[in-house]
Length: 163
Image 1 (cartoon, rainbow, N blue to C red):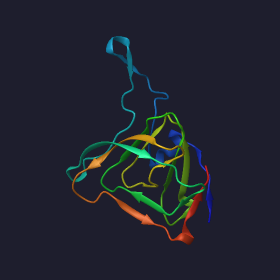
Image 2: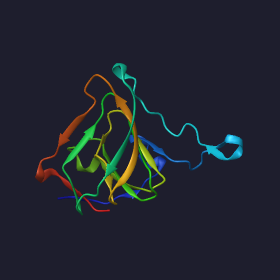
Image 3: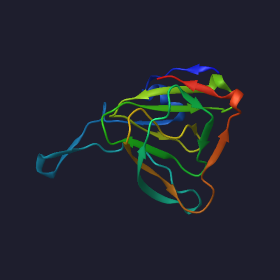
Image 4: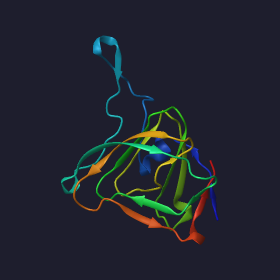
């Protein structure tokens, strides 16, 4: 089974798949009489196809056995999906252009201060965390229409992710 090792998550490397959500290189606005900073326009979440609406949810993720066996990829044809960690702990992001082409896979190690927005129709693995009870804020689409496509890989065609 091929082995994939993650690279550090960066805006440039992740651009073909969506946005990295972070405050690096973003100028904040002082609000609340100077007691808070607001970082605007960190990402765009696309939810409007087929009368979709914004859904904000909380995921509580658990680590998978190591090394992580990759047998499933998914994408959302009607909207994007943002994941933002609520703890400062590293986590994994796995994307690809074609689930059947191993050379199209990219793995990233995100910091606990980086989120991602998977663009509409981008193949990605479901949430991959390294620590128990990892909390994530999710912003995505809900509404009519089928917004989930899954691709199960044959066991002999899967790959292994080693952080």
